[in-house]
Structure formats: structure tokens, C-alpha cells
Image (cartoon, one colour):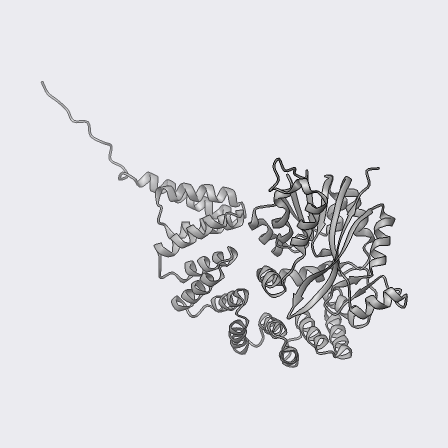
Length: 468
């Protein structure tokens, strides 16, 4: 009896089809990443990495996708794996460092950028990123030294001019900041950003007349620049109703990466904790340490920034929404994972359009960018359920101004300060709240923060929407 052997068909070697399929998944994942479809990108890249787990390029792409979905720990893991797969690749070292910065691991980020520079010392962006990491870490002198070197090498880079000036101002070296900007302008680098920094430095030096000239020169180049308009109004003592939206965005977008470190460790900002304390004082049954603690149905955090108020209130509510003008700050709020919804918008416009009703509206620091509080009060009133709370802070202004108000000498309702922020007369705040329909629950004099031992005086105020 004759037997026969069944032969496999001639074709691709075993595993070739799965490798081709992995390549297709990876290509699609990288395309989705470029299209900002991050969750889908993660799925496709995961399918590719299931077949080839140590492919550095795919790990790096998935790290970026994870970062943008808010899965920062997974992003760190993938970026680290990409570095281990190709330890001599400077691009992956820099990616790892950037993601470490996003996760708040600034010491490690400094090491990561230093390694990227060691691997490829030709990339300007690595030196700039290292300087930025040093700044966020709090090592301002080292950051300033590196930025100054970059500025000397690239004197026509307006970004280096303005960041050097800003760091000098942080170090209270206002004359040096002004000189850097003056030299740039004389060298032909005349941009609105440099006029902003130069005028700000002159204002800090007390030369209001010269600062006004500089802000007007900047407005000649950019007539609609809200930052320049606001600062010119300050030096000319104009009573503006609020800071322009692009002024607020410019201030916070540029400082988003270092905002929390400065707020908590340099300024000792107290307002988020004061807001939590006030809510629990009025509604003690919300205290999570109590048996069968209650929860608010919804809290709206206006001017949420990086989420400091949210971090102090999320366990008191079943739903938490944050609104802020700064998209860069909202990114950090998103990383906290405590908000159910975040919106980049003007807070009055957001409250006007929002159909939801809240048991509490909180404003940790945002009313300092409004002079006229009536539109904010009216919008907050509409968003509150009956008996809902509006808890916020305001700045009290100078001691002499408060004395003038108490004596009836000053009739000013609010003032814009050299800081760009507004202080408010307490009688004006109380009268505006009552005119809106609020009941005043409590007004607490408080130190809101302290900068180099100088306390910022203000008030923490709680209002209630009546039952009827």
C-alpha cells in the first residue's frame, strides 16, 4: 500500500503574516495619533505591540497617545520601555523626559533632558527643555544661566528674551529684566511680547511714565493686544471693568507648567483649603469622616486653573465641573482625574450657556480678574439650586485704601493693582451680592497667600441663593 506525504504550500514563512498585520496596526495607530484620535491610536498600537512588544518607535507613539488621553502613568511606562529598547536614541530620551515633566517628576526630567543632550548635543530644543525643567523644579538660577547662554547664541529669538526677563523679575532683579528687553528692542527685535516684558519690568521698577510709553509702543504694533491694553490701563489708572480674556490666557498659559509649584511652595496659596473649610462649616454633614456622609449633587469650579480647588472638593460632590480660560492649565486639572467635565471658556459665558444647576459654585482666585462683579454674581446665581452656595475669595487691596473706604474718603468700588489683579471694596461686594438676590452667609478676613513674607490680605465670602 502506497502512502503519500501532504506538503505545506510554498509561501511566506511562518509568522510573516502576523508581522505584516502588526505593521498595519502600527501604521494606522501612528496615523490616528497625528489625527489626534488618541484612544483609537492606543488600541491600534497595542495590537501592534502585542506581536512585537519591544519595538521602540511603537512604544514611543503609544506613550504620546496615552499622555493625551490622561493616562500619564502608562505614558511614563511606555516611554521608559522605548528608552530601554533603544538606549542611544536621543529623541526617546527627550520624550521620556517630557512625559516625566507632565507627571510632576521634575528631578527625573532634568536627568532625562541631560541624557538627550549627551546623546545629541546639536538639538536646541533639548537645551531649552532642560532650562524649562530646571525652572519648574525651582532651580531658577540654573535655569536663568542656561537661558542666558541660549539667548547669547540666539539673540533674535524673542522667546529667550522674554523668558530671561521673566526669570529676572521672579528673582526681583527688575533692572536686569528691563535691560535685556531694552537691548533686544534696540537690536531690532521689536515684538509685542518684548514690549509686554519691558513695560512690566519698568512698572516693577516704579517708572510708570516710561512703562506707559513702552505699552503704547507695543499697542502701535498690535492694537488689539489685550495684555498691553490692560497694563496701559493700570499705569494710567483707568477703571476697567475686567481684565481682557487674552491677558488672562497669556498670564496663565505661559506659566502653566510651573503654576502649582509657585502657588504652593513660593506663595503658600491658602484659598483652596479655605474653600473646603467653608463648605464643611456650612454643610458639616458633607464631611467624609462622618458616618453616612452626604454629598453635594454638583459643584462648579469657575477659574479652576490646574485643579487645586477641585482637589480639595472632589470628595464632597457627586459631580465636579471645572471652567478656565487657560487650556494649558486645564491640562493639569485633567491629569488630577477628579473632574467629571472640564471646559476651556470664559467663566461668565460658560455659566450663561450651562443648563445644569449646582449646589455650589466655587471661585478660588478668579474674581481677582474682574473689577465689576455684578455680571459674575448674576451668572452664578442662575446656576445655583435654591439654597445653593457661592464661595469665593477677593483681594482686599492696600491697608491705606481699606482705611479710606472705612472713613468714607474713597468711594471706589474696585481698583486694578500693579499686579494686573483687582481688589474690591467690601461694601461694594456685599451690596452687589444683595442686589443680585444673594443672602450673605459669612465674610471672613483672611491672608490669601504670602510672597517673600508679604501677606496678601483678602476675604473668603460665602453667599446663598434663597429658597424662594
